[in-house]
Length: 282
Length: 211
Image (tube, rainbow over all chains, first blue to last red; front, side, top):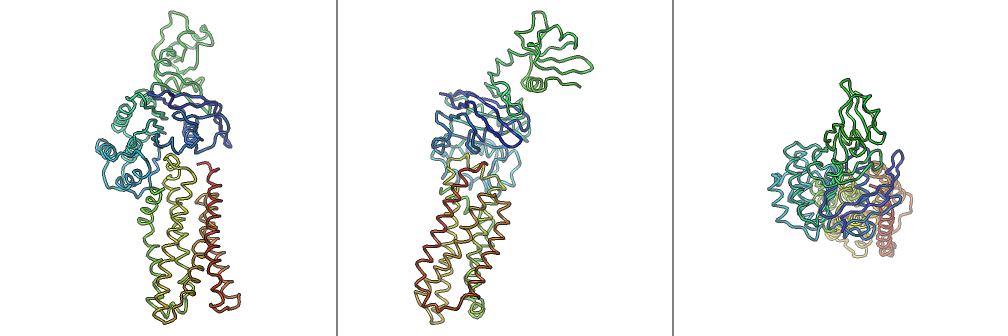
């Protein structure tokens, strides 16, 4: 079963549109949503949660339409927003009590274990926690009711590398069970690269591509050459370029480039930058 | 919904202890200082009920500031439940204040040797209206406009209500209390009906709201 299916979903706001997005997240996988600010990542997460109403298309979460008694489906969802959303004056114990009354499957032992594992101070008001600890608390809550699907909107933004590594490790543990899945949006592409099986690029409200990460990395490469060298390549081969006084870095489709060219491997971050900006001149 | 009410109870206790204290103090003044209460009984009678809206407004404002209203949409609650929890909290606060005020007023009348059940119930009926009317008017507007604009709505609602009460007290002919007791039941019914209607409108608004 697919954990998440988004089919031809569109949403229009004044000055913004999300156009005909289709995505599938199979169970047991992690899908990373990459996009610049305002690309539509948060809108997509909100559409999945039916916080904003889609103009058209369909969204199925854990096999059920997200407008069809979604309250029940949300029992199996863990959600973390970049601002978490816990009232500032509540402490971890009070938050736990509220969540215990909220989720049918709330697991106090799991919550306590996660608080300990993530070194989140007990009995301190949410506002007095550091940004990292606030985010870790959000993640602990999201994992303490045994969800099947995690929706994470910028969960690692503003965190230091050590905390980010803790969070990524925790998410890896979660997704090691095959019925679990994660949709994660982030600016920090290195985290997504560590974690994700699938990558989707959103750019100005459009889905540029959504593919298996390994396939993407196989499919695309980086060509270091002179600008004039690119002219001999087929147009379809060059997907983006960065021009500097020292030469050109071109994003190329490996299978469209004739044999004999030295194509280097490319990272997801570089791939996204070069793909979204047709030509970068330095 | 117990969780939503518990969350609101924590917030009230942390942020609105002073307002709760004011409610207690103003309700108890008829007992503590009967002379003062005699002169300004109407004010001490009505003011605690108006403070309830202040608490509800502060809850909504806190939810908005902490982004709880978005987070709550990710929890297993429907939009109807999110609105209903606020109305139930309003009802609980109104009920508590009503009970406190009627107890104090009843004791005051008892000590003065003027206690009459019909009069106390009439007071309860009037208080129900006063306690529920501002919330009934404001909550749909707060859900429609959001909390920031809602603060303005709150101020205007208080001004309008004050003006209406002023007119009622000073412009209408003085009618003996004994002739008003027949309004007790309609008063209760009207208060509850307005509150229920307000809930229905708020639910309709919140169902269509995008967060």
